[in-house]
Image (cartoon, rainbow, N blue to C red):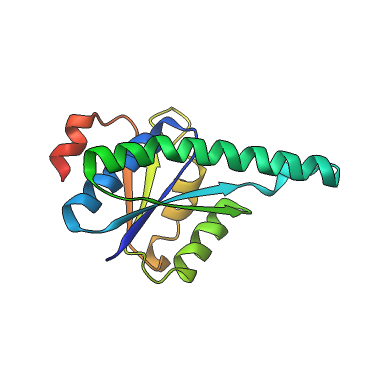
Length: 151
């Protein structure tokens, strides 16, 4: 069973990427891996304060994940997995794909804002020919109905 990692963050496009991945997993018997990446600059404080902040960020990630996980379980009958990594986004995504041999498709949400699809989509799009797995880019402004028509 191959799984699809999806970046878990607070962006609007994250919702569509999660929906797309869950619908695909339900249809194909695959899995969904919610991948949260904590940037290194989050904890550049005194050691004790940094540890408290790290734990608070992890708690917020778990709470955010549970919202998506409940929807996936209830609506798509998919049991998602949560992975939290710390570091720069693109290297951490590539490391996760390399370290987890069960990944079949990377799913990213693209921002519909004027500034472009987002830094992760932009950076990984430049590497399309050398990515170790296929990349699905889900437009952030697709409706639920449009997404369900794909799968």
